[in-house]
Amino acid sequence: MPRTIELPKPDDFHLHLRDGPMLEAVLPYTVERFARALVMPNLVPPVVTTADAIAYRARILEALPPGAPFEPLMTLYLTDTTDLDDLADGHSRGVVIAAKLYPAHATTNAAHGVGDIRRVAAVLERMQRLDMVLCIHGEVTRSEVDIFDREAVFVDEVLIPLRRDFPELRIVLEHITSAHAAAFVEAADARLAATVTPQHLLLDRNAMLVGGIRPHLYCLPVLKARADREALRRLVATGTPKVFLGTDSAPHPRHAKESACGCAGVFSAPLALEAYAQAFDEIGCLGHLTDFAANHGRRFYRLPPNEGTLTLHEEAWEPPELIPVGGDSEGVRPFFAGERVRWRLG
Ligand code: DOR
Ligand code: ZN
Image (cartoon, rainbow, N blue to C red; front, side):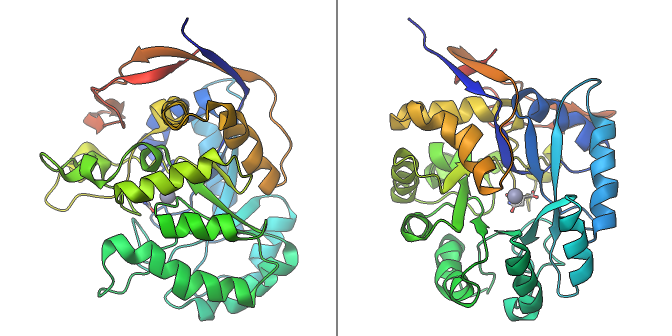
């Protein structure tokens, strides 16, 4: 008998929606699966002020399929010149749910990020007082640090001192990928949480690099070794409330991925929940999927439960090879394109 899972409508606590025709093309896939999503601010130029967030939120609502219930949860991109009062104002008005720390040049559109965390100490102090969540892209960017070690070095060099200096600050270490980060999260108190992507639960770096390079699996932080994936799986299998769903679905036009210098990002929105179900099934902890997808994150962000439910069926299907974007014939290629996903929505 094929199995079925019914769960409350979940939330995606880490999502790149972009803007313009890309936003219009990708948003319906998230809306089908999630009631709310924490929208990343790394546009060009980035979302740095409350006014930017209000305007971006309006563009997202405008791009929604008619009648679709969906709540974008907005974030601000921290810079060396973030305006403290504006941040506090956005938070108190409920417009801005969290602020995102990108170490400068760590990833796509992170050029405006923070060069030295000491420069944003006043912002962190204020966020701690406001009880506003800080989301972190946890990788150092120094050229001498190997790309596979950048998350672990960030934990040791930046995150441990940060937590010591701001013990009350609530932090989400985004998209964890390494055994080192998994151990850190497991040992931390309840003010630290983490998201984990479907690709990091399902794959290791061999999937990207053995038998030919697969640019559509390149994301940041990059896929790690099998032992790291196993550590992430063990963490999720504990059912800890400190870990929850954040896809990091990050669409790029196909030419930007299939390039001599391809962009980082896996576009998982068209099958995101299904891919998590597949991962949890492989791990043997499907019973934890509901809390991971629909409860742990919203509780950390202190949001109410969503109305409505979704059903997943155990039934193989193939996501499309390409999703068209505006008038562009090229489009964007989803995770699992041309392969079979073992769980299906609806
Ligand atoms: O792979 C990634 N893509 N990682 C990030 O941190 C950013 C994202 C993007 O915006 O494309
Ligand atoms: Zn991201």
